[in-house]
Length: 414
Image 1: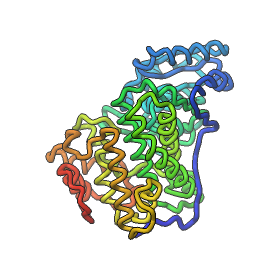
Image 2 (image 1 turned 60 degrees about the vertical axis):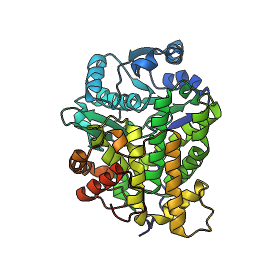
Image 3 (image 1 turned 180 degrees about the vertical axis):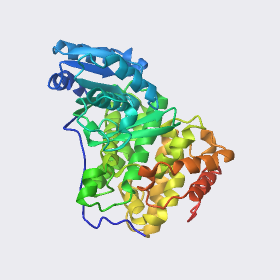
Image 4 (image 1 turned 45 degrees about the horizontal axis):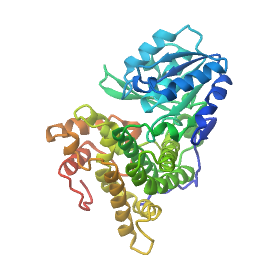
């Protein structure tokens, strides 16, 4: 069964401005000054100590904008970060939020901008289009090449009381501007570089093979994820091509700015795609795995991807075949199924290039976890409905068993 965009739809949500290129962080003070007199910069403790962060803050202040700093962002953005930041800065005259760092820093900026502008608790805004009015203007400056959060209208939050990841999904949190400067990734540690690259690659694969939803006008107006379409495919094709040539170069020479630029542009393309398609099974399953394993998000979705691709293959052979041609793993003369399989094998090779574990045992999953993870995966309904292969609790548990046993044969059902 092939996927079909019957409407010929092309659709993408995006920031008002995207500025890409080495050194383009110099535009930050002008961008912030246009929307703020008192900006809150949110980042993490490591980034806060860097000369680049200090330089960016000083440049904003030199433009005549007052700057407050919150530097306690944590990985897998905990709700406590948002509560602390909004409690500290409510009523202080903040009129824009700048997120500098990885995905958690940028998602923190989005969530804080919502609560400072609209009041209440961040839990009030979990779900789709639950934000009643505009957030404060958000400016994003990514320092990793992976999450795509600089351009998305999603903020993912770990709610410790619910013990699961929740999300604000709303056009009101689309960034005002994204400033993407590959120079900021040069100092990114190798492990983080690898994990974020695996995350971006999973975004490209899941967006390119996502279910076309052929949405109505009402659905486009009320749903964040409205399916794979011509514009998201364009971003995916560009991102996959850049990853195909850029990843090995970054691994070989982390200081290669041209390679860093290619990978960061690929991650931007991935963010633009998933902002409309959403992610799918790999991300739905990874979230509950994170509660029982030691793997980072990027390595978690990367380890799942070989098995999710095999699960989805019967439903999107043409898409995987086209992916193979983009990745130079097929020339179009082979039978379609062979091309599709070659595309999957090439994605696995790219994951291996950056050191991603390619089975679930190596990321700490155990057989006693399978049913719990499968059950909780199905709760991520906004992702489950994007997956081309129909997901069920039993199918996910069987897929986990395949992944645990490193079974990368060409099975038709898990």
